[in-house]
Length: 83
Image 1 (cartoon, rainbow, N blue to C red):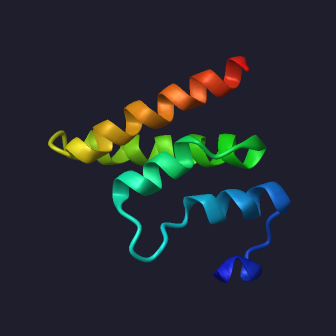
Image 2 (image 1 turned 90 degrees about the horizontal axis):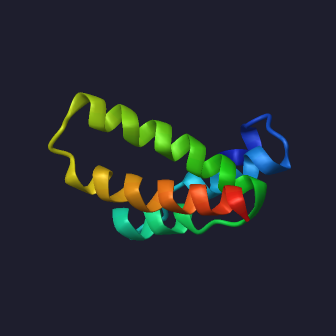
């Protein structure tokens, strides 16, 4: 992973790792991995991914997988914030 070239703290670096889709990882599996990521890095990754998804949806309303992912990630984000 190329995160060694990014000047970021531990949480940010971990969030970048969470946000990086693995080879062979489906969109759905990646979205669920982000949704269920733990800790501060998971919260940050969900926040970033939700912003990314909102941008995709704003430009293309037919992006069904993005709407699916937004639902799962947003639900987990709200559950984590009350925990």
